[in-house]
Amino acid sequence: MAATRVNRRVGRILAMAGKEVLHIRRDIRTLYLALAMPVLMLVLFGFGISFDVDHLELVVVDQDRTDLSRELVRQVTASQEFVVVQDGTSPDEALGALRRGAATGVFLINKGFAEDVKRGGAQVQLLVDGSDGNTATQALAKAQALVEMAGRNLGGPVRVTAPPLEARVRTLFNPDARSAMFLVPGLAAYLLAIVAVLITALTVAREWERGSMEQLFATPVGRLEIVVGKLLPYLGIGLLQVLLVLTVGAWVFDVPVRGSLLALGLGSFLFLVGMLGQGLLISVVTRNQVVATQVATITSVLPSMLLSGFIFPIENLPPPLKLISTLIPARYFVATLRGVLLRGNGLDVLWPQLVALALFAALVLAVATRRFQRRLD
Amino acid sequence: MSTCPDVDVAMEDVRRGFGATQALKGVSLAVHTGEVYGLVGPDGAGKTTAIRLMAGLLLPDAGRVKMLGEDPANTRSPVRESLGLVPQRNTLYGDLSVDENLHFFAQLFGLSRKDFTERREQLLDITRLSRFTDRRADALSGGMYKKLALACALLHRPRVLLLDEPTNGVDPVSRRELWELLYGLVHEGMTLLVSTPYMDEAARCHRVGLLYAGELIAEGDPRELARQHGAAASNFEAVFLALVEKRTGGRAA
Image (cartoon, rainbow over all chains, first blue to last red; front, side, top):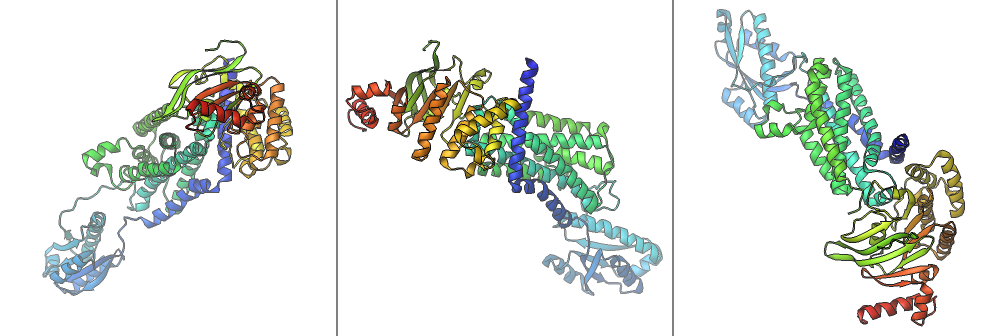
């Protein structure tokens, strides 16, 4: 008897899931939104967003005008990470160019530089446009490295001095300091969050809007069966998205998978369940596709981008936002992805992130199912 | 509350409002096993609210609703296994074909493969949809769509069938076909409650309840009601207008 009841439940869940698959097959836009968009956006974002310093426009103020100072400039600019846009100007003119935005840095070599090198130690100054903190930080780091290398070639230590800048700590497991290495995992979480929340919010709200919920509620199908049946196909699509995004990440951006596949799979599953649950909750509350789209976008795009550590490190957030970020599942998924992909972590290290993802998923699904009454009022 | 064993659907002093609007103002009625009960009234009379309450899709503010002796709003009740509903709106899946819609609802009602194959043939035959099994539901004509909705609601052989304005927007030929179909179901022992704004359809019912502004203003055999008001059974509109006039003192009719 109990087995028959369970069989019937499973049958109804599979019926709901099968129907959803038919809808997806009929509406190619859903598949595009689910599969093509994340990959397309990953490629565009991956190439478009880069925190790597390259071709930094430099004004050179060489007050020493010796062979040694000219050689230093040549060596520093040889790598093309810095390019000279103006040379032979006064410090005041150079600062003016910086203010106008005509250059992003001023490389200042004081008079007596060559003699200082011969005496055993010289300093040069790099002034960077601090309105772009990331560029400034990286420019300083790169300049230091280049100048120190050049100094060794020139026969004496040369150091770069600059106004104090707060340096952002970058992963030790990204020795080439490539933006793609830390952007791709963050982007994957961000895109999955948007697509999962949006698709679910739309599909359930559509049932309300076109009245098919009325027909469903007149059948023996239970609310949990509707919820699970509707979410299953999108969970499958979501996991396919993860695979696609990671494949594109590895293939196009050389992002490795160094850690535990089990932790990666579990993290992806829990994150997707949470995001699908969030979409369901939105659709249950709004019952309208337009409003559901807006709410889904606001509650998935902004937190996943700003409070997940995708772009801005969590540790740099102001305390209130840091506290709010603890409620954002993308934060834990970004940490999981970076842990598995870049640091080679496994369950032993990542279990707190997975517990947080599981808690969010359980909570949001429980609330959504509770709010999802089998009635039209 | 009627406790007669042959009462399949019962409402007792049921009230239901939506904000400031009172959709039902203390409606009591009983639908007996094997009869065609017509809930007749103009738009906004409260017919859809009454049917949704009977199907357990809404809760009453006051009063009681019973479907086959059970509270239809109780989700643990097995009453849904014995209930069929054809809503007023087009609530099937328009992007699914006739066959896919039938298969989906058969799965929800737990029909075995053998049962479904047999039932599908029967229903496609009586609804004359056999030639359109691959056609998407939203590409069907109004009458064909209603027949498909009826077929989906009949898959599990319900004891009670609730139809909310099934002939609304349907051409006269399809209307007649639908009614013939419904009579066929009654011969099989099914209980039917049909709401309609068309007064001429009242004569097709065994009993009617005339609903006006949320109140049941008369109930009984349509022929008897017509005789009482000195009208022909075919001119039920005159009966309805006379009853409304009597109720409102001539203000609304």
